[in-house]
Amino acid sequence: MLLIFISTSAAYLLASASMNPRSAFEGRNPRPPQGTIEATLTSLGVNDNEPLLSRYVTWLGKVLTGDFGQTITNLSVNAQFAERIGSSLRLLIIGSVLGAVFGVLIGVWNALRQYKPSDRIISALSFLIMSIPVFILAVLLKMGATWLNQTVGVQLINFTGASTPGITGGFWPELWDALNHMLLPTIAIVLGGVASYSRYQRATMLDTLNADYLRTARAKGLTRGKATYKHALRMAIIPMTTLFSYGMIGVVTGATMTEQIYGWNGLGKWFIDSVNSQDINSVTAFCAFAAVVVLISGFLADLLHAALDPRVRS
Image (cartoon, rainbow, N blue to C red; front, side, top):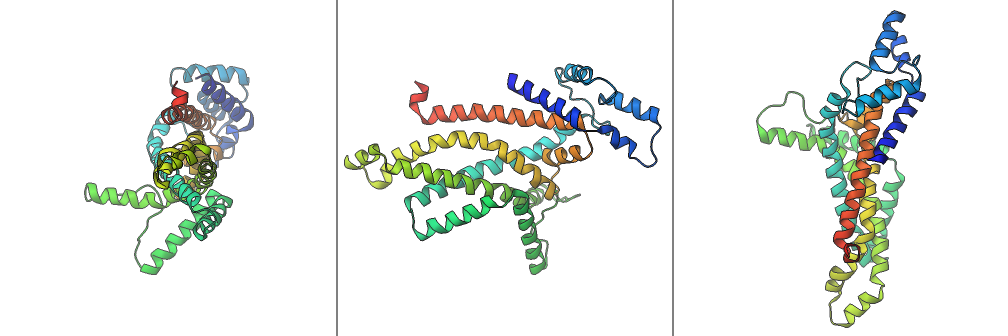
């Protein structure tokens, strides 16, 4: 909790020192009267004519009661956050889980077939995907879906927003529509996870396959498959638990760009819009969310590590 407090406070102070919400009002056409601008900035708690320390104390008093203040458009930050967190968590959780599962499976498969053509091809594809920034990968997927839709002559894949506006027809049509819209953003997140996790898993698995205790297990009569499953795979996954957990923050960063490109009304898109509109309170709320994700990730890493390694529990 102390780390969340420090990181959120640092985010607020940095945002207040570097962002200029005054320009969002002075740049309007027609320009509001100066008195109106000052009163609005003061009511939002972002008037730069007030000392930063004074603004911070006022902001902190509200945050400690669970209120992150108002957005630059005078809406509740809490309400805006609550409206979007469901969409973002849907992408983050599904993308993280699928990326980790497929990354581990592919990494193990490659390690068991080291230097074979399949290992070389998948390794080359992994390096290629890791070298492509997430937002370019998302744009390429979008272009591919557009080409496919034009080729077949129907809107086979939807990739704008989380659902089709005004869709009706009951549970199944609405579920299919939601899954259809989620397809490309999820693939964009999963591909990056699979590429990186598979490389780490391949390396840890190769180290484990050459360990003495595995040769001992084989000498005692275990088949290669049983020795790999019972001993090598378990030990190879243990170092990955920390990577899985703290990789969540990378997924949050990647989802920020993915949501923006696909018009997904989640926290990532909200964060970018808030930065562009000089919205200090909203930017700080997103940073607090990222800090909470890191804290939960660390807790999950400890639980996973203890579950897989009896030495930690003892």
